[in-house]
Length: 423
Image 1 (cartoon, rainbow, N blue to C red):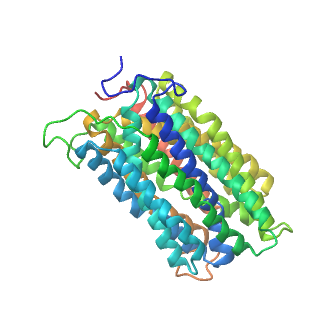
Image 2: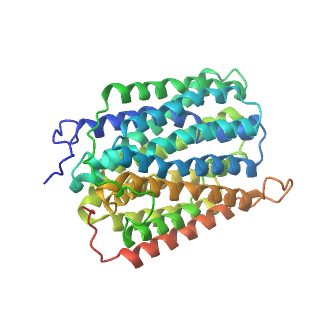
Image 3: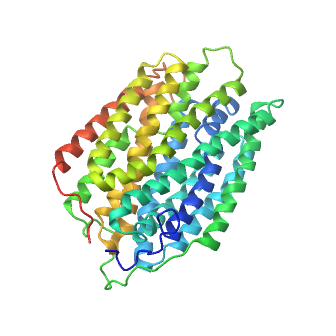
């Protein structure tokens, strides 16, 4: 039986209008972001601005982790105000405004400030958006809803690198720096369309009113299962450094080939497209599977696949191996990213769902700072240690070990327990 605030109309691919249109918004936003950040941004920092690996880790870690503190606040505000759409629009709007400024940066700290602004926007929008998705569908199809949203998000991540590849080809007669800067400018267009879609097409049904004082910004309203899940998510995330390091590892192997910087960038974009295509194709089926057999078995498989991929990156000796590893990495993404959010929603009381999802996003996001700094340190020393020896395999060994530990903790604390949504 559907809850009072879920949408009954499922004419939009099995979902109500809200879930479908938020999927479109995420598609357009990721189309924009994936043109810029996962491949082009680290290459721009390394090859154009000549930024050290340690500083790249610092930029990614500080931007993601600091902005993540906003996620629990925005989630709590969306519960308290019983209004999610305005915060969603604010977050997407802020990211859209700062993105084109990357075309004009001249040093690493300017890139850090702009990257931080983009991540602040994500910090504002993520928890209210996920709470709106969770509240718009019946709990029995929540995994499918988050899987669909993740699939649309990842479809944008397929199209973004493909568009970046096209633009690299169009600007191949220019320097890599010019091509990268043009991509940053053009990528703003789909992000702008996403913001317009929010205002025009996304509808919101306000959650039911709750007694004054019940919506608190604390863990006191959550049970032991939710707190254990936050702990396990943190253990996994501490080894899950920015995907920029996967790209840089592939670049490190590709640098042994006789290729121009632009040709190498095109190859890395192609590899990243394969990863996102696999993830997009499998995300909705993985969500449906988690509705049927439970979140825990799917998450354990996802964590173990991640560990295998990271151990593979540590041992990889050629770009041929990297192609295969990125393909398998898509299985991990499909089996975890949407399903972790669905599980956090399952474990959160309805009147604290925005807060619960905000806490989840914040825990995962905050650990990105030490995760990326640790990865940068393990690879080539701290930013203030010029000339430190490079160990490109070490970050991936560390990430593989923490993923295995997280999988073991899931089995230890949740195996055999009933997975039910909190009413």
